[in-house]
Image (cartoon, rainbow over all chains, first blue to last red; front, side, top):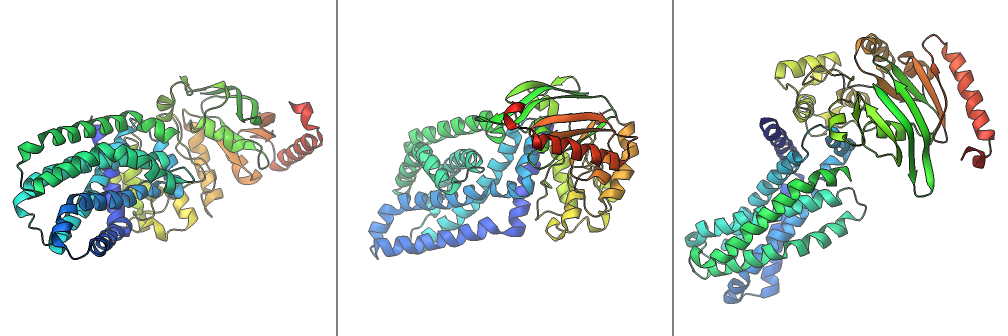
Length: 226
Length: 242
């Protein structure tokens, strides 16, 4: 178990350190999110009420699109210098690599989400402070699921020639249950309803997270070896 | 130590390896010699558990490498075309990453000592992006990487390790003889590669045409044998080989 944790930890350390130095994903994602905000504003016009009604959907659309960009790149680093082959050759449980990658993707997505959330509040004049704690629960559960299934499909398509096309085509349908639950829960919370009222959506998110993480752990070795 | 029996690999109707068999005992070093497309890399990839043969059997140190590839991977070291280097990590960080992944001791002292072995201790904290191809080769998986336990097989072949390659090959040769493992290398170079090998297998068209001891043979004799076999193979009608 200790060795498993060390291996997962070193993958996370390597991914975060590489990202900190290259700033390839984070910078692109932050600018992309900013661009999305402007686009939504232009598309929906100056009507604040209309913007607020569409806010939960726009918020998660932003997360998903930014996630697509970030997750799609998460295995590109392994293609350089045949590092993918090196990972295949390391002895031991390959799911540790999945756990490390998943944590790295989760943290990157979380940083982008906090940034987007703050800008949404600022741009659309929505006071998010009263709902910040319950919203954080929804974001946490939603992001774990998005990162879990995204990491798996990113690995699956990393070695495929048409990966830029295949990755979103495979990923988006798999994200539907997560998005349905996350958008509905976010909408209810923004309307001022208590967390207990969105309990069924949180349960759906938790179950989907569990399913995606377990499937990822069980299948990653086969994906790496394929 | 390594027992490959009737290995065959085909993609659809195209066979890239045909009935390849050989055995290596502990301490032996086999050089695979052949023109492009002869099947050298395919054999190495099968031995490394990176590729499954279409048929045949493979045992590495008594482990059935086709049924238990994970167990076999704990016993082998591979140096392929890629250097397995992350460009944005330093030499020390790269070494730390792969050592932990292999379950080894990644203490800074051991890592720096390992870098000293391949003369990279002076650039230990510099990013791999600034290294030459040869330096990246030396930083890749090698014998200087700290082992989780005494390794039954060496962690470094003698291929493509930069301008210092020939000298390093001669330095590693005594180590090969003392190891409890076996080494397989693929090479185009008669002088450098065969200097470390005590057996040579000459391949063409996915078949082993000759497999014989070479430790006492001058490289000119091996070159003569190689050229006569390859010429004879090229003159042979393809259907006669199937």
